[in-house]
Length: 398
Ligand code: 13P
Image 1 (cartoon, rainbow, N blue to C red):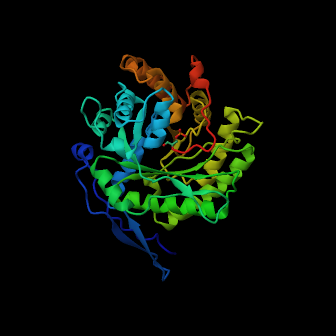
Image 2: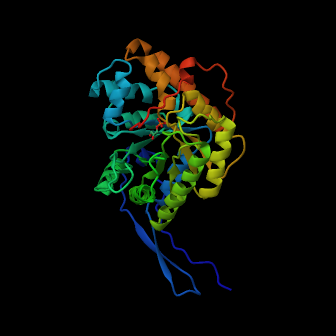
Image 3: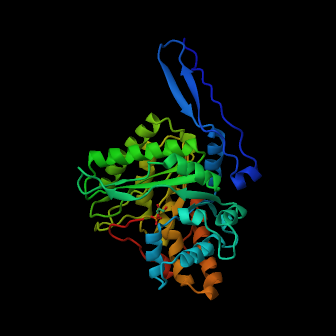
């Protein structure tokens, strides 16, 4: 009888705290190892990042009970739209003031384990001169970085898009690690009304897999985000079918690229009807469809599933997450919300220094509500009318 394959994995020790904080320990990436099967002539070369242990540890820290991710990685253009909604100009100073507000909410780290930043913020200081990254680390929040370069039309498709950013990515991820980032995000999208065509799905999945492999090589845990857009009149069954196809393809290419599943996080859309569908779904239906999808497609080796909010209202996103956490799962099922964490906070702040305290309080209310939802203990009591408003925008770009 054949014995188990012999596997040799050389991995580095986990960084101690001071190294982790300063991000100065940049080790040489990549060690190859060979996996041999004694009865078979075939030899597979499997590559593992020299950061393997650290990647696993980072992913576990982010996927820790009662915590999730604050996505605050809006590009300057998108951040400008947010600021315009409260009558502020899109200047670097205003973006800095808003991001300072978010990272400095007292006690945020109790509910938030990671924060995704835009490049500007990763290298920026707060309005009182501390590095944003240091403020996050003091709050026990892992700094992350959006590394994709956005969406452009995909020639040869049905008006669909593809995500840019692979060129030069390994130099950028190495520099981001040195600056203190420990995880990365790449958001590509799939549109149901426009197809999705086999080409667009393949391109999305391949891009995510290449990005994930490159990020792991630099010590960054990749968040894999093929967002299935809410746009459309389709019902929940169509979303489910498309999501099954997309995740099958994503995992096929992740495996082909030797991505270590224990060192990634996923950022899926919940399975819901299209935003313009007449039939609405209850949180229970969203949870049932979404969990069925996850159980069919996501290996238990993946530590965390951090949903995006995608235009749902703050309360809706929390209720849906809570419904999914009524039973135990092989993975941590949590949130990585931008709009569904920030909306009421932004409105409450309104760009006025005298509102900072109130804005912090409402951000903590939302973060705590989602923390409860991660634990399956959210009741939905006492939510404001503002938090119940939907935020869907047709053709939303991030
Ligand atoms: P939303 O939660 O606003 O959909 O943001 C998703 C996202 O990808 C942010 O990183």
